[in-house]
Image (cartoon, rainbow, N blue to C red; front, side):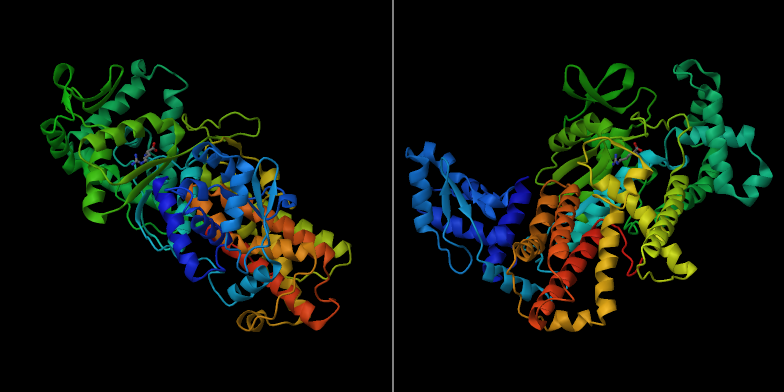
Length: 608
Ligand code: ARG
């Protein structure tokens, strides 16, 4: 988190130059100056300036006086008064109010908000500045074990990794994406066994991907629910095939090479459907094979690893926590491969951070891996496990995929798109029945809406969760037209765009030559303030690698917009300047909505 702090500080510095851009940073800068002569290190106290939960207490609130009371040995209210006296309010803040034990309530000058809004209007980035301290990130996400069809369990890593990539890049960082495919594991033994015993030649010739998926599932089914796979003869035969592959058996290696492109094609089809950014690299585990003996040697030499029982090589973390880096039979492990991967990435990409977007069940693996890497001399690089919870079925139980009985991801996606179309048609009929003017769209347009809505729904449902929580995969909820869903945001966007179409107003002119903004009602002021908080939301998302900070912001924005729209006539505003000012609010709302959704990998359509 130190880096996130640095990032915030850097943006704060930047905010001095472009002071209207990030309100929080502007206020914090003023607090930093005010606290300078009170404490040697103002940093932690400056961080106590935060947006208020309740607008009764102003727009922002500082509770540092209470914390400072202990350090300075004075009464918190006195300190609060002292800080306020030193605070340069400029044209940014109204005179602060001291409340309760010593809270400093801060209210922005409405004229400042209006001016700032007008300034960001021509800006394509909507006031979000690029970081002054760009870092290079490697993000390892999706990283499925190939050879088996993707299932719902692969969704989260793929979606979260893609969103983090978009977000970090937008903020000006360099992101190198790497799909660390499991392309060398035991699942190939299953495929090899299935190929040799169950293959339908004709089907394989026609649709190799389908046929490989079928035999994979079939072999898993034959192994059955037998928990004790050690004694299962088919499981045993599969293991033997894997061992042959790893020991250089010519036939198995030839088949592995034959399977791989098919396996990749299947995965890429899903990525394309989901609209995932193309990867910079897809170095699977097999890519690191040649490096593994050298890694183990180096680990031994540097005393990170030690000999274990019967020729095994281990890394010992404590008495009951040991990781194998070479098994007794000479085989290398997931840990060895991941250590080689770190070494390779450092050498080739020179990152400041490597993020692993992987299921919480691998927490121990990553804790060990990072510790081993540190002992091995990897320092000064942030290594973070971006952990996430499970996707549950509607009844709240994890969807079982291990035995091959989980629904394939591609089917879930296709179903969401179908439901997206249905949703659109229902809404079309509803609006028609209510006498609204509804555009008649071509089949292609309807298809585009279905995809945006269906896939957007899946992504938003996932990203709007705190990533460490589990969530239920429930189409009804994710496609709801009311509430914190992609569908709601997409409709809000399209409705907003239709205001301009209907009134025949060119939004482009409004943007480049923005009118004076008037914020006379609390609804207008609240909306304007919310729009100016866009950067704050993105920075808080990045600080915790938490895309749900963006959806939370979107939800607040949508609610604020709805309050504004219900109370403030736009097209029928009392005067032309007011109409223009409100149109600018509408346009900025649409643009921020669209940008946020885009950062989450979600599409918008102009009309629905
Ligand atoms: N293939 C692994 C799995 O499906 C995930 C790999 C994650 N990345 C890594 N560098 N270990 O469980």
